[in-house]
Length: 173
Image 1 (cartoon, rainbow, N blue to C red):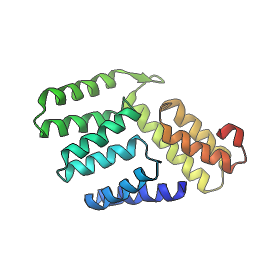
Image 2: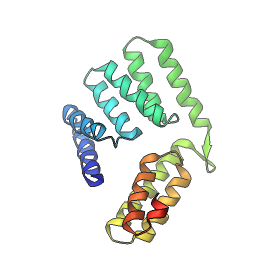
Image 3: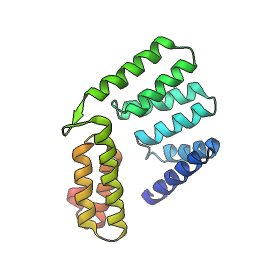
Image 4: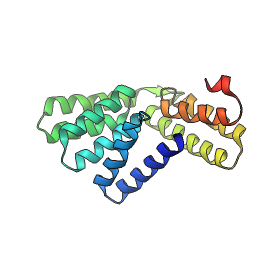
């Protein structure tokens, strides 16, 4: 099931890049329906819906992303943009101010957006190690990623999957 979710998400990202927002929405909704959607899935779904002119649905998805990760700067910015397009100027300004305030916070001595980018880079490296069968190195990279993004539940989930594969079920729990 996890592999299916990752495949759907990868395909959705590809559809988004080529501006096939309907295709991206379809695939992302499948991920949401599977119950395995994390903040980044809801964010991308919200952005795709926004680009299709479906502002209210976009806002719902962006709000869900922010429920899962209240410091998700990109989701706050996109929320502000959608609110602005809907003429809800005061709410848009509030979203932009929250995004700006998030930039003042730090994680592990780094600005939050930089820490998030590095966390995702470590996670990508972990996936590469896992794909090559170097599970201990993959786990080390996930640990580094989670130091930088302790609230990234998708990374916890992916690390748990690798821990299970490595025969370490108690740590995966």
